Amino acid sequence: MPRIIRTTAVAVGAAAGTATAVTAVNRRMRGTVGDPDRLPPLLPAEDLDVQRYLGEWFQIAAVPAWYELQCARDARAEYTLRSDGTIGVTNSCVTWWGSESRITGAALPLNAGNTRLIGIGPAYDWAAVTDSSRRSGFVLSRTPRLTGEQSDAARRALAGSGLDAGQLRTTRQTGGARHRAPFSAYSSAESGVSSKARSNCRSASAR
Image (cartoon, rainbow, N blue to C red; front, side):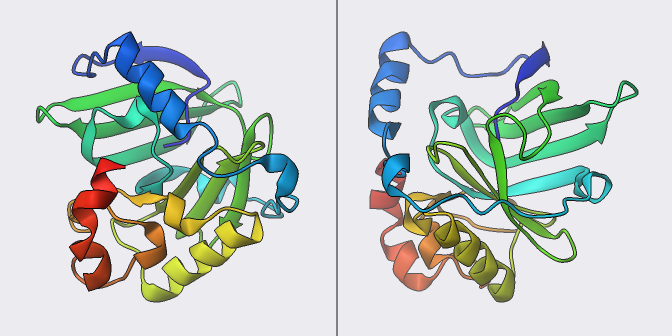
């Protein structure tokens, strides 16, 4: 999920990756999306209604990132409005060990700082998010699975801001995708990804 800016509490259960592993993953992730100087200008979503954006979001797909290596499935984010007017966010997922990892903190408003909302459904039922350098990318949904219309709209939003949907990998969700595969092949079928993507899921998961 989009990274938390300031952490206030971290639940026990997060994976303890070695510095060597993190360095290797960072090296692999660097430049995954592309050189921002060669990409078209970002197209942020206009007239964001923060109140409608609050609540729970399921991560449908994301550019692989080292801080999500511990997550096996069910990555989610819960956004709340704090009494001081800031946005609170709780990121959670089920780890490979079956425990829940939960991190609570404060997030910068969308389209402020480094976070860019580049697509949002008219019913606030899906969203596409990146950062100013376009090194990251996320597709979020109010449900564990997107419809065909929603996934097509999310891919158009990514492409409109210069992101390749094939660089995002689907997130395993209970009731949604069962395999990791390129978001470019995402389908609203029961499995969450197309049959072609399923045949390549092993190689996709290894990337």
